[in-house]
Amino acid sequence: MMTEPGLPERRYQPVISGDLGVEAMLGEARLRAGLEHYGSEWFRKPLGVLAAALENQAGLSPQGRIGYREHIIRSLINRLRMMEQIRLHPEILSETLEVACVIIGLPRTGSTMFQRMLTAMPEMTGVLWWELQNFAPFPAEVHGEPLERRAEAQQIMQDWLAATPELASIHPMSVDQADEESVLLDHVFSGTAPEMFAWVPSFFEFQANWDQREAYADLALMLRFLQWQAPGRAGRKWILKAPTHLTAPEAVLETFPDALIVTTHRDPKDVIPSVCSMTYTLYKLFAAEPDPLAIGSFFPDRWAKAFAHFDRIRSASTGERFMDVNYLEVLKDPIGQAKRVYKRLGLEITPEAEAAVTDWLAENGRSERPSHNYDLATFGLSADGLDVQFAAYRQKYLNRDFLETGCD
Image (cartoon, rainbow, N blue to C red):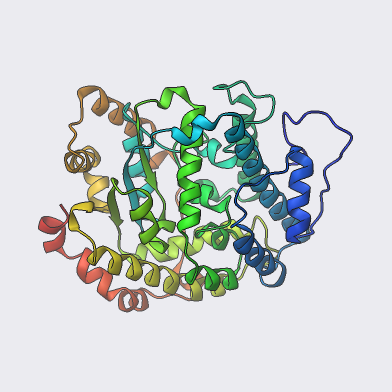
């Protein structure tokens, strides 16, 4: 992205470089946006750690450095624009945010399908993929008519698919459907998205000891901001989902105190190699030579520890806030599983809502996408090793007694 669509014409020309210095990027974003105020700058700390990891560990290609820098600057510009809109329209802060449920689970457990199925119902909503790329309106945008932002998101998606065609088989790509708000957290340099796009182990170590509550406060603010932008969302409830929430369950529970936590489950022998394959594919967008063995040595332990942490917090919390959904059950009876969630929410699926889900399922079958092919050995993994590593998870959440009686 060379310039920001809709940016008022001015003599300044954007600096397209690989300079990952924090002050340089903050200044560049200010110049491009023509704005000064970031609001609270708590995000400087994680941004600094991420920038250092990108510089010293990620093995970025020359174009990858430029591309990742542009990605960061786009995040900063969006923040500047959001803060300016809040200054002009303080009523944004008074938006009533109703989050019905947060879908949390290991990656590759069917959570995207489940979220999109639920958000197909007319009374629900989720963050759309195009909104995740630029959550703030462009300068010349008419309120409620985000045509240029959607067009730019479409171009971003096309660029990704041109660079890594196999991504189409891994994740259902659609600019107009709901997707995970880990991308919103990525805009404030938090959560697991950075490590899914680049080899940044020092950023992971930092985040393991970093309180993400400020990031989640900003996530709630971005959701209010998106809700204010779209009058059609009035009265609708949000369905959120992202595996990154496993790393900050305390922040999720505090930020969205009325939300039902829906945990999706699938055999780790299927989950982990699929995660590694997706990560390897995403790394190719920015890295010179991604290392599949390094990926395979890191991510099983990373996600095992993340789920164990979530499970400890869950065990110490009231069970009324949690329910479980098994991937295989969703494939077998998707509408039945949606009804289970609605029942826990105290709602009933109307004929109109059920028809909307039926239509969505008919239009979004897995057969419409190419097969996702991956091999455990590529990442130095074995089925027996994953069974041992995730033995506690498998025993608790994949045994037949739990599936039949314990997940409501």
